[in-house]
Each structure stands twice: as C-alpha cells, then as structure tokens.
Image (cartoon, rainbow, N blue to C red; front, side, top):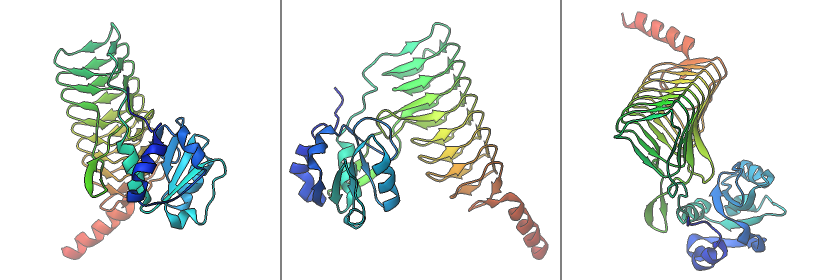
Length: 309
C-alpha cells in the first residue's frame, strides 16, 4: 500500500520540535490529512505550504486543503477558520519532510493497451499505464505510471515519460530527493519526439499534461506539473520548468528555456534560444536572454550592429 500522511499527528509529535514547529491550531483536524499538495491542489485531505500571505489566502479558500503550513510571520497576520494551521520556521522544511514520507501509488497496476495500439517490443512499461486506440510507442521508450497515452498519440524512440524530475531539498541536515507522486497525461494525437523527457507531477492525484495535438521536440525536457496546451509546439532541446503553462497553439523555439510557473499565452511565440522568466501575453512574440518583445530586441540588434560597423 502507498504511504500517505494519515499518521500526521504522530509525525509531528516525533519530529515537530526538530523541524521548528512552534504552534498547531485546530490540531484535531490533522487526522484528516492524507497528502501534501500545492495551495490550489484539488485532492482530498491536502496539507499545503503557504510561504506568503497570497498563498495562505489561496489555501484558505481551497476546500480540499485541511492543513496549512506557514511561517510565523505569515501565521501571525492570517487565520483560516475550519482548517489546521501548523506554524513552523522554516515552514518549507516541514512541508518537504512530510512530502518525502509519502510514496507513489501508480506503480502497482498493470499496463492496459488497446488492441489497435502499436508498442515496440523494446519499450518498457511499468505500473498503471493506459495506451488508447491507435497510439504508437517506439523503440526503447520508457513509460512509468500513472500514465495515460491518448488516442492516436505517438511517442518516439528513447523518450522517457512519467519519470521523477529534479526536486532536492535540505531537511534536518540531510540532502533529500523529493518523490514525484503524480502522473502524466498525453492528449489525443500528441507527439513526444525522440529522446524527450516528460516528468510526472509532484503531487499525488495530479498530472503533467501534454495537450491534444501538441508536439514535444527531440531531447526536450518537460518538468513536473507543466501544462502544454492543445496544438502547442515545443521545439527541440527546450527546457520547460515545473508548473509552467504553455498556451494553446503556442510555439517555443529550439533551445528555449521557460522558467518555473511562467505562463506562455495562447498563440504566443518564443524565439529560438530565448530565456523566459516572466509571463508572455496571448499572441505576443518574445526573444533574447532575458526574453523581451521580439521587435524591441531586433531594433536593438540592428542599432548595435550599425554601431559596431
């Protein structure tokens, strides 16, 4: 059976002092906690980190969040009726301690492959993997559940879908890898090209998503909890960091990097090699490091070229 946080009261009793817990409000609610999650996670029984007042408000308004883990400076100014509040400094250390106490629950099942799907004999399928009609899985592909590969989707040679990503934290003096506990959904008609990597969600019950008809290019890396919109194009050798959002029909040029939690709007274009650290509006076009509107970058480039000549 997968490990959950049903024993949270016992964990806090045993380790709370060492982790900096100074107060627990509504401690009687802790027995309802089942898992860690983001402030917006919609899964039953979430314990969420609220490192600032904005995230505290999101967690407070989320009916699925049972317990909020917050630093003293935030908890002193906020309240959350009907929820447990664990006041802790540093709050993120407790959150990651609890996250690491859980285990993935998508590895116990068996692959479910539609009769019309084509799966190369060298592909590796582990756990709860559903491959729908007409999908094609190429040689040496690795698929780790929980994973859904939609109708007519294609995953080419050597791609890895559903693996853990980089999530390392220092907890109680020990450098720990944080498990990724969720899954991946590949939409109908999507295409994951050769050597690409799609990391599963960090949160149990949630998924990294590649939308219908989207393409993920050769050797690109899609981080945990990324949402790639329908018909979007991620060109070769791109990096899309965790929790970023790529809008429908957006185009990301080769070797571009998208920072975590950034939103790329619908129909936006990110030019080749760009490094994007802030949101890009619907239909906008950006380029450069750090990325700015493409027209502005081109004017600056032409001006500098004339000056150098």
